[in-house]
Image 1 (tube, rainbow, N blue to C red):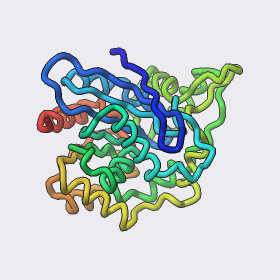
Image 2: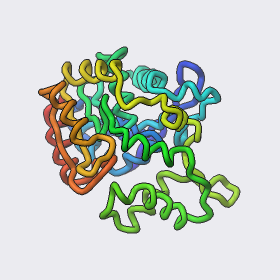
Image 3: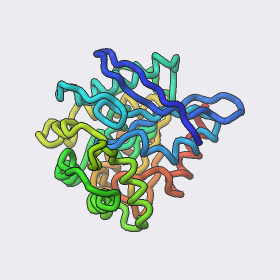
Image 4: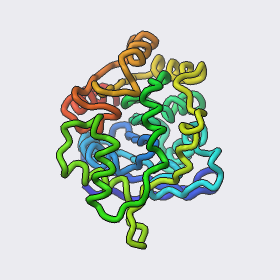
Length: 289
């Protein structure tokens, strides 16, 4: 399925990007805004976004500033959820979207929770994909170990091997062709015979310097404001080291009405193409106008 490329300007003048998938014919339903993880980009949704669009929903998959086709920020201090949330709100405003369903993977879920603090009316419902207000230090340390540190690659095979090395513990059943697909999402040809990661290495500074905490009072407040006021679904990878049972149990107690789905044999974070994830998403979206 094709998509339209959208460029928009942030409040501080950066040129940002999103993929826009048109809904199929049928009664109009609330659009969906998909937000990727820390070192990822909009291409992570290249399979799930068309699937959602076929359910009569427009889907926007964003490149958060510093990633993909979005401009890098000269000020690394702006690589934080408060700024990211304002960028997403600006995109929605520019496109005339007053309410949407949000799907946030990892960092994307943190951005969604942050939106609930200042732009609560924008969020009609939310899917938190293997993320939340309390995170496992084990997963944070693992991510800090590779984020912003991957060197350039000389071939697509080498890039696929690098992606596999980072992610195979979370996706032990991935076949070789899946790793190549991931490599083409994560790397780009720089025109000089090298493949480079599609993000600014400075995006990793908050997690590498310890500014990103495993939890905080503000994060827990944001989660409660999100999940207690609207339909919310937590999708957790059964092998996840970022949202382990301790963290998911806390979230389910803090928001008893929140729906929950676990994706077996997958770690951080499910791609949302897995049968268990799609069954949960289909049921959740069917209940949201």
